[in-house]
Length: 105
Image (tube, rainbow, N blue to C red; front, side, top):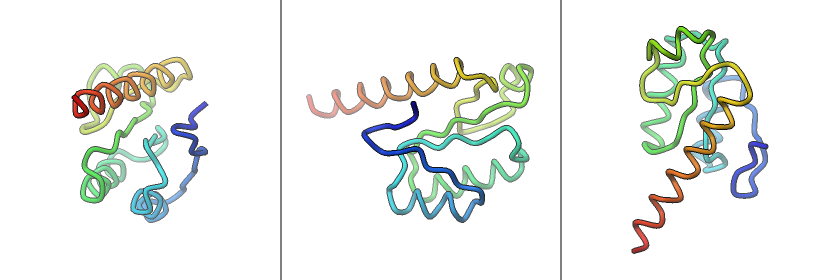
């Protein structure tokens, strides 16, 4: 489901591993699990922005409250449920496709 542009889903279990994948241009989207502490999440997103500023990042929230409170910055916040995640990925893909089409014009 999360194979984008024919790339397989890659899993990483440390910030260093995530950054290695991003630096090697092996990912089109990063999804951060709700189990990652907020401080670590913010540090990871800051490091990602240094490497690839426009890389889409989805942050899975631990609760609906977190989604509504916008506690995370610089990422798309979604509920910990498949449907909101699919909608977020779809909207990012549409946004990116529209951006590519407007640049081509």
